[in-house]
Image 1 (cartoon, rainbow, N blue to C red):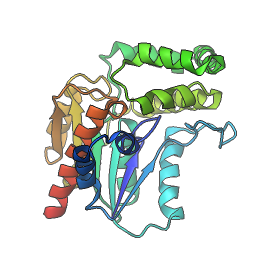
Image 2: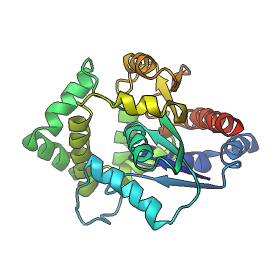
Image 3: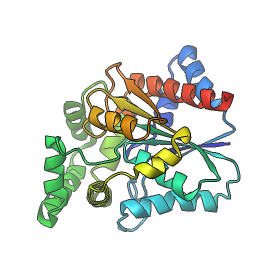
Image 4: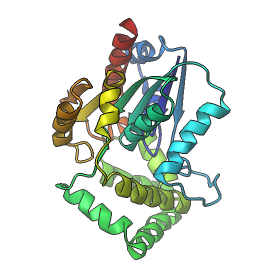
Length: 278
């Protein structure tokens, strides 16, 4: 069996965050119990969202990101059953992989899932204005890319002031090394544009109902990407989907903190163990 982590974060997968920050045997044991019962694990991030410009400026839409994950499975010639774990838009990507690989994908876990636009969110309203405007998108891209000219210490200070000191050192470093890259921020905004266009459509409830025994979602109590009204809508539309609410105070960007990474890792481990025990 292969556990495939999808879009855990634009910056880095929370599995890497955990390995880098296990400061005691106790923390290592909790991570081990998450991974030990799986034969293989792999993390696949967003193509084009890298520190180095491996794709030579190519922009990837949401659909192309999905194709990228499917191609990964084909190129690696993976025969084992798949457990798909996606964060945010990665949850949508995981569902699409479940659709395209119905015989191979045995379980799909969505963490703080972004499955539809939140019309009540002021933050998303601002994002829409930026990504749908070529002028505003270009201005934001040039501004963020210009930050790469600053000394690393200044970038680190900006990251700490913007994101808070609760972020792990690895998350801050990745923010400083990846996001200010011109090709990365262009890809982030372009992918976001295609995400918002696609997710303005009504979710495919029929597909979710047909596969509800294979799907689990974890929601946060204050997350505009995966709001509780969507939690309630999912429970109405596909009551067989396993739903949970995280009430420990972690955020949508849980993988940027050690505490959030560990809590979610335990939750995912529990879900997969229970699934395998059936």
